[in-house]
Length: 452
Image (cartoon, rainbow, N blue to C red; front, side, top):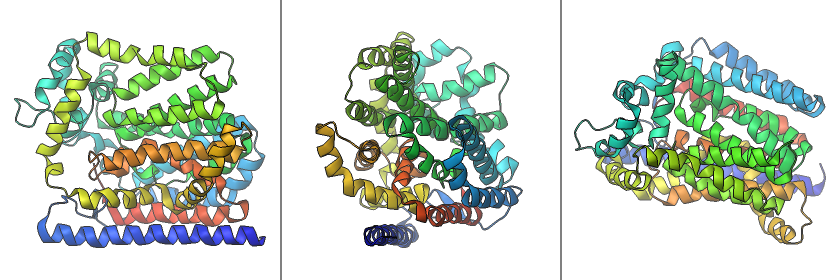
């Protein structure tokens, strides 16, 4: 390494060290608060999890996948053809997510995740008449309303629950199919981010990020939570917008319209993901193009139009959700703890490699924005703008007070793009950082029983 590279590496390690201290503080302070007054409603703060050291049928596979990606991932990412890289990354991501999920066993890790009393599958039978249920949806949000929805159904627009209703209608009902759906769809977020990086930055940047996008601790919560599915939909929205803005697809118009359709859907999957408008704006800023905007906006209008005509009022539901939110655990969970402990939680989701990459992105952001005004940006500049936009969206969610705990799954869409910052890490350190990612994920999944 040159002197500059050594200095950068030392700063990366310092950032990772500070992040580790933040996590330690969140664990210690959170445990003290929970032991003192129980207001966190968490067994193992800052995560929604409990201490439960265990191994399972997924353990050998998880170890094998981690070892293979660390040993061969960087070199394969450098030399495979682009299409082979996409296929290989998706296959490896699927293997990593499935193996981590199966550490908890088939039932506990996959088939029963989405069938608990908090989850969407609890209310499938209440959607026999979908239009009537949508018209009546807001009447069951508040916790003191008759037949109130369980937390996850009440906490999201009806598009989230409708996904599982439609799966049930086509014969894929039950927790096993729901879990498999979330894992399969969620794993495709890797492809979407790689495509986005290739068209916004360059192919080399995408190749450097690929092993990290596969071997991410976030995979623990992709398998199997609905938020992994939300993350994939959001990632494909950004990818299609990037393709439309750069005109690197056969039909930029179709890509722009498709991106808008997905963004409209995203707004009816999770209220908080409307913040992804910041990432969409970053795509248009980096490409210096507003050409996709009319068709993007036209596509975005479709889902709101359909749901509104069906009788669901998004704004009314959101305001009722805020009231419901503070009727539950959020009413006693201390904002002063979660506003910083959520960031510690994010460290556990994205890993220390991403922290190091974010350190580089934030440090280079002023220069990147300056060069953006002169249209003389480098691939690293364009990546930086994208990553910083995702970070700002996450910080907005944090300070809103509507994200007290469980952000390890709720913020998966943001974490997916934050992980792209690993492309900024120097090649000589990639395997070391990959090892850190794998060790963190394996420790979390084997020492804790995560839940949501």
